[in-house]
Image 1 (cartoon, rainbow, N blue to C red):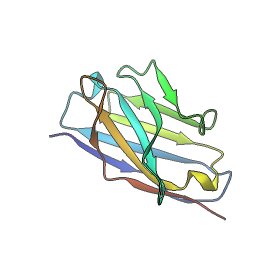
Image 2 (cartoon, rainbow, N blue to C red):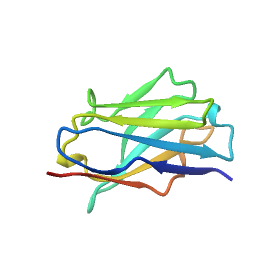
Image 3 (cartoon, helix red, strand yellow):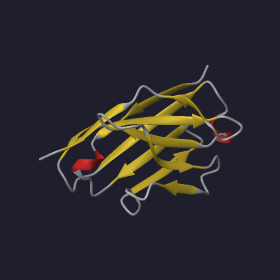
Length: 118
């Protein structure tokens, strides 16, 4: 059974940085794409960033390009999201996702709260 456990969320001032981590277990981590999604109150869950199985291909939402970086360490079964220059509109619950063999979102972590406020 796939388990994804996020960590690293918290309260940060505008302009600050956070790094989220997602530790995976229960699957062959290195063969699946991974993504970070977020959901703000009253809004739909949206894709923030995605990384291919080997890490060579990354994709970002326009709203975070140039500020966020997704990466992965297949030896540690972990995916990261480095978030810089954070804005209040980045406030949301951030979820880690593992894709299935058809590259569809399949498994979810429990989420970690990120709050950007002065």
